[in-house]
Image 1 (cartoon, rainbow, N blue to C red):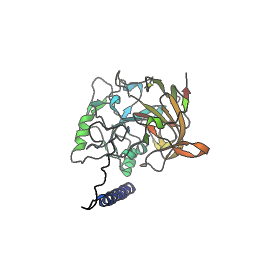
Image 2: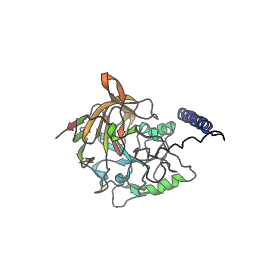
Image 3: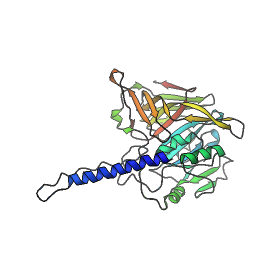
Image 4: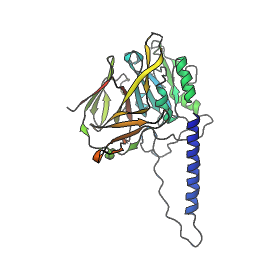
Length: 339
């Protein structure tokens, strides 16, 4: 946490110094003509790269990352259609859980809300996000506190139990109330871009890919189909009309270790290692581009690259829009169809 603050402090000093020098260099004397006025770069949203229409990309509330159940017991999931970005990660029992990111559009009721994992530190830290969760194991809470990851949980503003659902899949939250409570006393700010965004035309042609089956374990596979310019989760658990509108699917092959404790059922809790590097596959526009990902430390941004001319590594950008990120274990698999 100290390293992150130091980095930001140095960045702020550099920005202020650069601004001062720029202003000094642009000052006109009575004997000199005014410099041409430069156009201001358009505001964009940090989780999608999309242009902000008629406003600013800075909000008083932080990025909110809600941990959502992703088993049949969660149906119907609510609020995914308003998410800017979703990360799917492996948890115990071979099933997955979602980290749904909200910033540009804060909906009302979202859920069902479930617990955090140590894997979430590397997922949420680059966005300086606040987690919305049902809680966590004692060991996980200690590690999130050490990493400086804030969270809100049941008992806080906006949380409630839905009588129409069975526990523990009945914890829901009104995310607009959560955002309002977290906005109090805060200045407007914009987090850094979560992904290296770019225009769709910058994506290499790649190979045709109209379906993707992402196998996390023998117990769970997420399947995608390219339809009408976007990607459809063919096994979606979301309420009809409330599905996540994925413009891109980004698959990262990751090492999955042991978090070092058991869940209440006695199962080992896995931990996704989101540092180092690995293979990446980007799906957009019905095509796939293969490359690599790297991340220096847990709060560092994700860097993507691909092989360019002569085998040289060149940056790979994600087309602006809503992205679903799959953190697929090395023991898993990714099957691509082109029919």
